[in-house]
Image 1 (cartoon, rainbow, N blue to C red):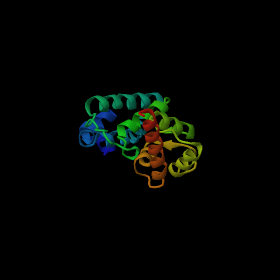
Image 2 (image 1 turned 90 degrees about the vertical axis):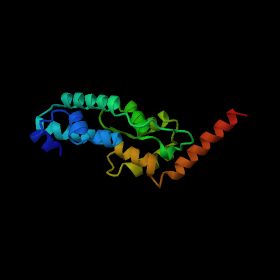
Image 3 (image 1 turned 180 degrees about the horizontal axis):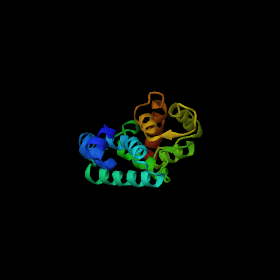
Image 4 (image 1 turned 120 degrees about the vertical axis):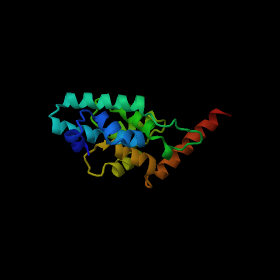
Length: 175
């Protein structure tokens, strides 16, 4: 659809593709954000964009998506770690991925978990990395991190422990 929109509908930006040509941003703003890197890649390859242009197009599309397609405001009352809002996870991921490489190392994952208020022990980090880093390169993309953070069965024990530790700390403070 990206190639078709470029060739037949004169689409010239990733935001145009996601908002007006496919309407994905209107239908599911989170899905639009998750597909943005691939749209930029396809357009960049087809249009001969260098890395700087790709980053600029990505940043511009992120700005459009965040301003015009923010999605519903999440109600986090009673939320648990495994049901974290995708936007919150993306915000933490991007805060650590300052060079916008699109992936985090183990240290980055540790920092992102810390940023979200759920620090990982070295054993928990190692377990999480082995689950997320399926190709063994030591790099985890945002979709891999989001999937692990919200849905991983193997990580539920870690998440429950973190919630218990956090609740225990909260109870100690409120005594």
